[in-house]
Amino acid sequence: MRNSSCTSAWRKPVCVLFLFPLLFGCRTIPPAVSQSDDIMPHTRKKQDRNGEYSLESMVPGPIKVIELNALPDADAIIPRLMDKQVVFIGERHTRFADHLNQLAIIRGLYDRGKELAIGMEFFQQPFQPYLDAYSDKSIAGGPDDTALLSHTEYYDRWRYDYRLYQPILHFARKRRIPLIALNISSEIVKKVSESGWDGLTGVESAEVPQSIDRSNKRYEQRLRRIFRHHPRRQHPGHGTDKRTTVPTGNKRTGPHPVAAHGVHGKSGGHGARLSTDRAGGQRRTDFQRFMDVQLLWDEGMAERAAKYLTEHPGHTLVVLAGSGHLAYGHGIPDRVRRRVPVESAIILPVHDIANDDIADDSGGDTESVPDNPSGIADFLLVSGDRALPPAGTLGILLETDAEGIRITSFTPQSPARDAGMEEGDRLVRIDLRPIETMAHVKLALWDKRPGDRVSVELHRIGGVKEMRLEVVLR
Image (cartoon, rainbow, N blue to C red; front, side, top):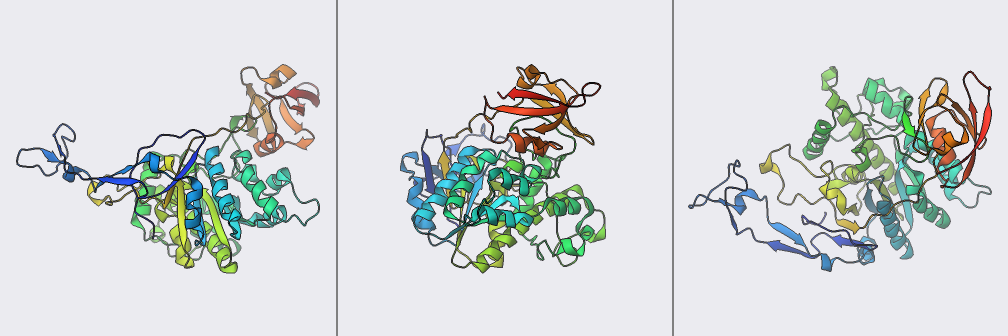
């Protein structure tokens, strides 16, 4: 059972990682203060005999305060995690500090002798053999980072800057900590999103959870809220985008801001054997598709995690996922525990409790908001942000079509334009690596820095069939 917690305001410490268990350092302010009617003049609440609204009638539960000076350092809670079989650590995918904080918890558990495995949202289950090879140092000439990204089709399926996750993977590889791909494949997700559960073949059906729980109404309410805020982006997915225009280098394309917190437009499932509502065989509404999407993602990752825990009872599994998959336990955690009885803890970045897409919601019905709505996690991490080092870029905007990748325009002070590239040129190779998709461009440039040189081969329409240019990245 997760600890009760406190609603908080916070400031960012500089260069220090703090972590606090909920209720640690909290003080309760009794709601004994009267409030005049200029605060919530349209709220129909109880008035006292003087005609004033009482604070008790407006605040759903006692007010909690976090005492910032009482926050312990991250190391202080590692002993409280030692008896857990699963530790869920949330993230905002694009926030480097969140991934460094995840690594700090992983390191703390490892240094205290825990047998660990790391389950990762950002790799898909069919590519598990490549993660095994990456982690196995006994394999002579095993895959390096670039080979891993290529074999797992990382930049087609996830797209976020790999350098965000690189320190975690390097730590795990050096210590031979198993890496577990949690995610359902994009092909299944896309097919069910477009065609429904019955659109899956028998082989595909075997790859998705056989049981999906729709009973959590707060989970559904939160998804409805997200859907209302992003009605046109309900199925962004992580598959290949065949028509994309973005600056090259390590600029991100892919999920919209909701996805950065772990609520993605994915779907999938398994026909009649799933305990799901398919609207009586009628055409699914957009929200039903969106709901199916999120359920498959959470159930799929939970099932893979539970399978690993069952097969490796002596290991502690650290699950790294977007905070929206973990908040309140509604996504992955409760679905893991439904499958296997384990002790677990949820750790989230504190900035996510202020995010509307993560916080619990009751669709505007304030009477149904829980007395302690910030039971979002067992622990919250408070830390300053940290930026990745600058990435080397070509300074070009690209578009993908049936013939490949072509330049549509240039950024200001573009090194590619200075090197002689023109609008309409088609990229053929970068440093001898064939370029056919946006993912190939990202793979060729992911580890480059400003000042690095790359060789770019291109085809110029109406001119020389192929030409090669040397570009100094900026």
